[in-house]
Length: 457
Ligand code: GDP
Image 1 (cartoon, rainbow, N blue to C red):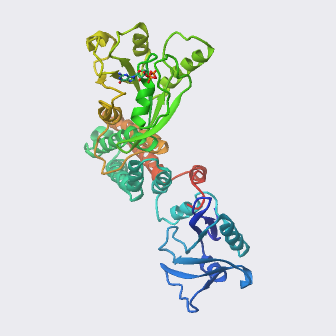
Image 2: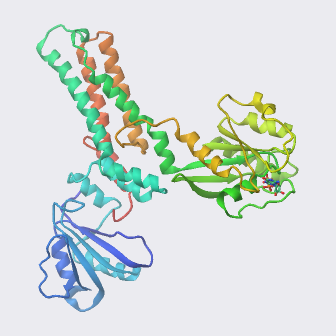
Image 3: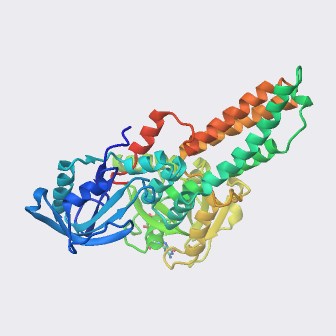
């Protein structure tokens, strides 16, 4: 990749806004800035991290393209580590396009997606996991996901990876010293160091954060199912506070999937109301019910809704039995007299099945239901990793490989193999950790990662 040329891009979203930002980074940023910017005060010292007011002009100063504020960040104290210029102009796409064309005319190259971050990485301003955190923070759909991204950007993951690295390097040093200075040794002659066990624990703890972090970043998919008329549409409407699904006492009204988003404890939750499960009365209902089974298989949590005011039927039992996911039984219509005891369905449920009594019509028990939805998915992983969490599949796979390498090293030490085997596995474990931070990474993978970023970042 070229690091010498000066790149430019619009850093704000496409569309009309009060302000739009155009960014330049590279050795010629200031030189080009001087050509395009006519400061309001003749004496413009271009001090780093100062904001200057003036006009953006076309070549030769014939036309004024906009009135703007321009800031200059001198290398290495900028996001990319290079000279950076930022033009705060008016957020009209036509104005921004004209300025961008002028900058290209003056020698800038249009930046590729993620190229500013890529330069920051190459200039050691951030490591690869921080660059990725930045991209996921920008795309985050919940406040908690933003906070996780920010913690990684501030180096929480980098620090934890460094801690594990240090342990592995110490363990490797002990093994390598034995290889260098002693003939005919086996790993059973090497004093057992706690580093490998500690590294294993830390790797496991970090990996355990993935499922919770994924929920914070990607959200939960929750399907509401049950036979017709138990109150599925009423529950969707009550949880969202909107009238999205039709509520009637005519069975079989919902045929398509009806979805709506809510946020619970900072987690985006996609709620899906489905057709009631029963023997279909026509082809449309048959299609609708087929869709339900498809969606149930992909759901994170399934709410099985039962009507507490009417006896349990064959359809209720079928819905419970056919569900293999995490289920939450919600017994609806508690405002009406109950006709059956919870024990009636006990034989169909696993020991840890969660049951709650609600009234979708009157809003009873809904807050508790919301919290149960989220808690059932978050409860497993709450380990201390110093704020570091894994949200990225690439990081997860590299950590898993590293953990396998450490386990293999431990195994060859326990079984008394030649120390070269353990040393080889520990080096592999380190290489896999280095893929996360980008200390050692294949160029093609690197290109792919940055290409998935947005333009101007
Ligand atoms: P769905 O077919 O499962 O989507 O059920 P609906 O939401 O359309 O509701 C069916 C009927 O049950 C409607 O007449 C609702 O007003 C009624 N209903 C839903 N929830 C409750 C509840 O908590 N209490 C009472 N009394 N009626 C309810």
